[in-house]
Image 1 (tube, rainbow, N blue to C red):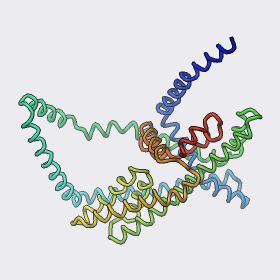
Image 2: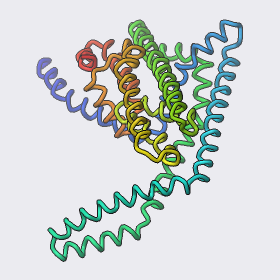
Image 3: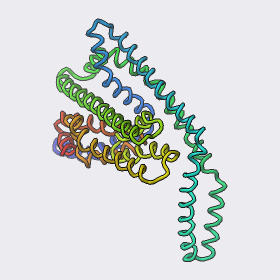
Image 4: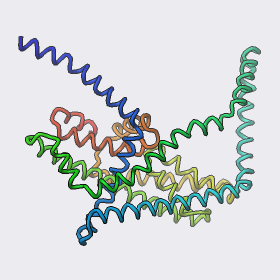
Length: 355
């Protein structure tokens, strides 16, 4: 009887694990706004905690130091946002100068598409051509831009709502760090607290290493991009470098996103292909240097993930949480790896993530 009971439990364990994993994935999807807000606050807390600790060593109360750091961070972000708004307003005033080259490109693309449609219509039957024409008219009357704007309003509301909670979460995480740590340890039995403490310590090291290392790589990319934009005489060089360099941090897709701001601004200034080729070549080179040299040197010593695990994590978290999933995929996967390394039954998963 005991043997039969053991076999029954073993047989039911795999479906139970699959069901539990499905519940976790569903929770991550439906509670994405809450989880993303908390995770962003956690990463910011790990990044700012050394500054608060430094102020505490100078006999500044931790709560006061946390408040000062949070207010200073908000002020910096508001200054950057205000500068971006001014540049966007300037871009709107200069829109007629950008419209001519964009209109020429759009006409060229439209002519190519019209040529392809003509060849396709020759192959298809007249009924199919008529149906395609009706479909084109229907699409033209559907106002896709307006529909896209309205469809994004709910997502924008969630982003703004989550952003308003981040300063409060950040302050409480910084000010009550020791109390939160002690309360977290009390959640586990006394026999497991040593292992939990080691795991949490390693998670702290990994997250701090990732945040600080990524920030250093971002600063290097922004400075190098700024110098390059100054060299070619691009307008708004610093803000363009700030956006382009930050986008360049995103694995794989970041290099494409980093091209867009300088190329869009360069449409008004440059009338030859050479500057655009230079922007493409330099930003791609910076991305390759960051991905293959800077990130492994500054981040990879602690965040040890193989290329396959990194790619799968980017696809998975990007599918669940969109752009924020791409940004948070690496630290989430790194934390999962640390947990797997400290739990004996999950160690094969940890070895696979770093193999």
